[in-house]
Image (cartoon, rainbow, N blue to C red; front, side, top):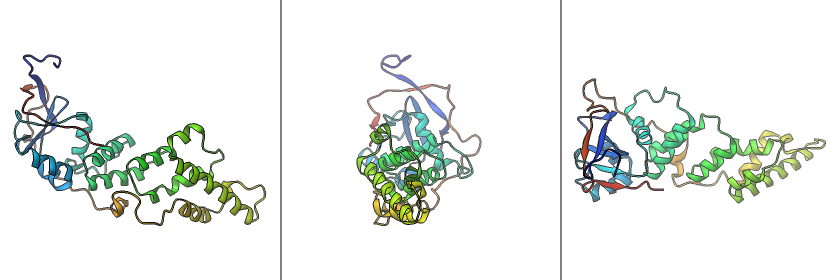
Amino acid sequence: MAPGSQHGISPIHHHPEYYFNDGNITFHVEGTLFRVHKHFFERESQFFVKEFADTAQEGTSDSRVFRLDHVTSADFAKVLWVWYSPSYRRESKPKEHWLTILDLSTAWQFPEMKKLAVAELQKLDIEPIEKITTYDKYHIDKSLLLPAYKLLCKRASRISDEEGEQLKMPTVLGILEARERAVRSAAEAGCCSPTSADADDEELDKILTDVFNLNSRATNRQGAQSQVKSGPVPIIKPPKLGVNGVTNGNGLSVSGPADRKVAYSE
């Protein structure tokens, strides 16, 4: 039983920003209610289209909510922020913000939102090991990793044991092969005591493109959709003052049996 609950009924609260009186779907996340517009979920995600079809009555009211498990209310709010913030293109958000959106948009099958997250991550300065492991995890177009591969090839130190454990073996072997070929290329160009950093940038690009097969068909589940040049994710203007529902602090209660539980899906 949750702290402060009585007779199996747990107090929950409206989210201060994402509870709209004209919303038509109510989500329950970590004791917080989000009443938003179902249209976005049905238009953008086949995952939610199926979930809504299987449970047509869930989410219709505060007492019959659509429950999301294994996700925090703060992270769910980040997903909603993409749609409800008309100024998100001008806002500077940290890497963790976009990684959260990338994670949830992948799990819940929001392809347009995933493209946006990738585009925003491309603007940030991310260490090459982290960038490679992240893009591999979420099946993002490998051609976007060319700058990260180059940094690993041109740096003085080789891949450490710790870094090797983070990277997949094909990536480790590919970097080693590219470094060796870069050294040979620099030597053939007349460089004395060459290192991989001495290779011509254009030649290194060709080497890495060949080693990692970057010119092949799209290497992730999104295919061409994973390219950075994508259209904007649809958004709507926030409601006018007074349209929002009750803010946090005005508690209400719902019982569990009618709740629809949807686990975080990887």
